[in-house]
Structure formats: C-alpha cells, structure tokens
Image (cartoon, rainbow, N blue to C red; front, side, top):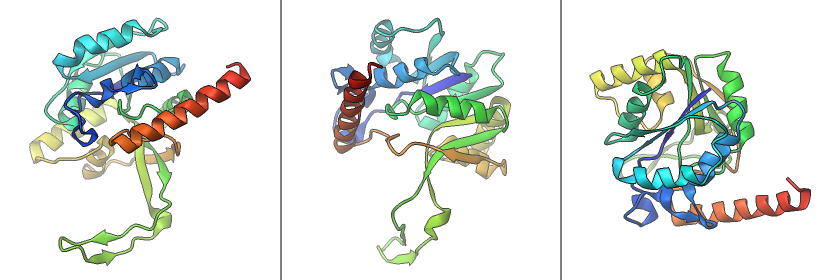
Length: 235
C-alpha cells in the first residue's frame, strides 16, 4: 500500500514559529513517531512525505535515524494548503499506485494495526476513513452564538486518518474541487461533494491530532504508558 503523509503545517495553534512536526515529543521529533509506526505496518510499502522545502533537511535527518525496512521514502513539496499539498502528493505517486492511504503527520499515536486494517478494507472499496463515534452532545450554533440544533449523537462520528481512496477517483475529485473552488479540511469531503460513497471503519480513541500544547502533553502521557507496558512485556 502507498502512503502519503501531509507534513507541511505551520503549527500556529501550537504557539510556535516552526513546523509542529519538528517539535520534541519524548526526546524525538513528533514526525519520527508517525513515521516509525507507518514503517512498522506490514501493509505500507512506499511513503511520500509532503512538506515545505525548507523543512526537507530536518525530514532527511529524521529518516536517517529510522529503520526504513527497505521501504522507499520520498519527500514531496507541498502547497499553500493541506488540500493543495495532498494533490501534489497524488501527482507524485508511482504509476503503479492504484490505492493510497493518506495520514496526517500530526497523528503520531496511530498504531500499525490501524494502518493495516485500513489497507485491508481499502482493497474492497474506493473510499474509507478511520473514525470514532462521538461521545459528547454536539450543538449547532449560529453566528450570534445561539443554539440552532442538537444533532442525533448516534449518527455522528469524529473523522480521523488514515483515509484511503482509489487514486484516480481522488485525483478526479481534487481536480473538480479546484475547478469549483471547493475548500475542504479532509479528502473524504471531496468525495462527498462529488457524490462518491465513502465508508467508515473504527479508528482509535488515542489517535489524537496534535494541534495544541495540551494535545502534546496528552501524547507524551500516552506514549510513556505504551513504553512502560512494552518494557514489562518485552515487546
């Protein structure tokens, strides 16, 4: 399975000036944790890291410290938005790529099992996303702060990544998005706009997207717990 990792974000909500994926998480760059898990997933055979060129030297240093397991890892220059960056990544895929997984670099807690499950399910469908059922009651609010609706919680899922798609279908949806001027926050939304079905598979509660300093603290706690368990079990 081919994997694209968008890693071009500036991390403004983290309060810093550098790419948040280069921040230290238990003594290693955040991106190193994401890549280590992806490389350890048996279903992943090729990885494209989409970033800004000024971060490439740092990305190369991270890759040099990892065991690549013989898997090609290519650096791809991103665009001005996540949407544009993913389209650049799709254009850089090898010709043999028929299906692709896309996973946010900031979701460094996803497990190899989740990558493998997504890859297995993608063999049977043209579009899917990892997601988890929403636990909180969600309120829809207007521009003045008044509640307008309380959606039925049983029908709500929080989208995660990996998300997986048939390559040509996603390329077509991206091209249509460019023509229509659509701005979306994930690739599944493009398929929705194009009327293409996308299914949900169960994600992981710990598959956080690191966006704020609080998220970083939670990630440190979760990774520390995993390391302690692995030390006890000898894994």
